[in-house]
Amino acid sequence: MHQAVRGMRDILPADTWRWSHLERKLFQRLTGASYSEIRLPLMEFTELFARGVGEATDIVEKEMYTLSDRDGLSISLRPEGTASCVRALEEHGLLYNKTCRTFYSGPMFRYEKPQKGRYRQFYQMGVEAFGFGGPDIEAELVLLITRYFEEIGLNQYLKLEINTLGSHEDRGRYREALVSYLTPFYRELDEDSQRRLLTNPLRILDSKVEKIRDIVSNAPKLIEFVGAHAREHFERFQELLFEMNLSFELNDRLVRGLDYYTNTVFEWVTEELGSQGAVCAGGRYDGLVEQLGGKSTPAVGLAMGLDRIVLLHEKFQGDTGRPSLDIYICILDESKMDRAFFLREVLSDRLPTITIRVHMGGGNLKKQLKRADASGAGWAILHGAEESDEKQLVLKDLRGEKGQMLVSVDELIGTICSA
View 1 (cartoon, one colour):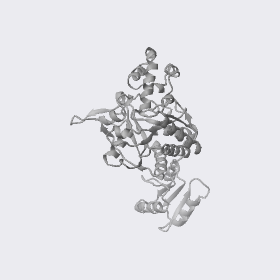
View 2: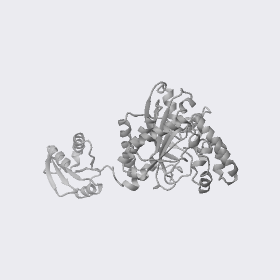
View 3: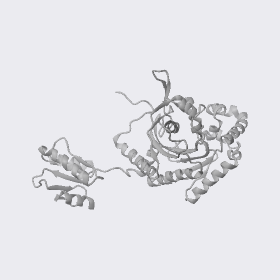
């Protein structure tokens, strides 16, 4: 028997309702704030990610799924969505001298060590906004996501951390100071940190290794290298969060792992998922559009790890949001199966939010009612019962004390709506 590829997994019908519920809530919140959905391809030319994400990042160096197509061109499964989104909007002329708010969702791919909450095929919801240079758009994104977490009952298990990286020039000066500080400790660094010292030293600040954290505790502080304009931007961002009563903590080690970030960065973290603590993160990346060949365009965005949101929701919210089966139609006369299907259509048109299942596979009434009860349905319709006709139906209360009753379609609808 074949098995799924390591790091890939099946999301089964018993679980997909939770994914759909959580995605739908976020879709509704984003579209309500005038963000429009974009759908992106799973594969791009490898160069896009090398230029956008950064050649010295772990993603490009070690984690991408890359292959050559029949024309000898190097293409990769997308490891993240921002570079693809910028490419698509720029290619279709939707960025230059325009503003754009957009979002997308779907699978991403990284060759990482699989563990709970971290998979080689994982799912993200990304949100991006272009053409807005001020901290107000960053505050809006934080507000939208905070309200989403409140709506799905998870906000109390999450903490928002923020930081500023300053401009590219600020970041460059800090990089030099950090390398100078860390170089004497080279032999004490772990293998990953030694490699990052030569390629992406800011990532060492985010190390989870205790010894490395002790070493960087006395390193120069990034905020000391941030210029006046970036400081003013970051202070106004904090003021907006205060004014909206949004809680946050400053974290001077928060740097993000992708090269394109500048100025504000933010991350929602939890202590409830072990080592996989980050569930949503983002920030400003004003230089990325130009870096990918477009005109200079201010931009900010975030990515949410849906796998981890699902784990948190399962842990703390149980079956909240799970759709229930409302009506089970038992078939007492197989020759009237077509009428049962028609009845379901009538009821679905009148009650579009309820779920209705028509019994299939035969069996006597006792067997069908047993299945109806096991399905969790609140009501059973005994379709084709001798005492009913085309204008009246036998309705049975499976969960309450109303018993069995003969009702018209209108009376059935009224009974179910008032229950």
